Each structure stands twice: as C-alpha cells, then as structure tokens.
Image (cartoon, rainbow, N blue to C red; front, side, top):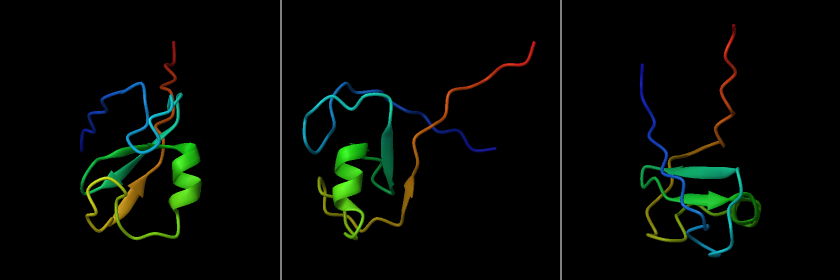
Length: 68
C-alpha cells in the first residue's frame, strides 16, 4: 500500500488564489494546483512551476467516510 502525504497550503502554487478543497497533484514534482489552473493547464505537458515533464496528475482526494 502506498501512502500519499498531502500538505494543504492555503493558496495555489500557480495563481496564488485560495485553492479551496480541490487540488490536483502533478507527478513526479508533487506541485499542487487548484481546479481553475488545472482546467486552464490540461493541454500542457510540463509543470508551470518547475517545468518538469508531468507523467500523471493525481485527482483531488475524496473525504474519508468511516463505517460505524
């Protein structure tokens, strides 16, 4: 099982606006972008921040639901 550690910054790394709950994680660099930047960015192949080639994009994590 792999473990993803998510640091919740308050602002998007690209636009500097509040990210809200949804953030996409670029791999392998792990930079996080908000939904607005993701929608503008989807045709590109490299990170806007560090310019590394993006191999995949992890979608926003869904809240955990616990069974009682």
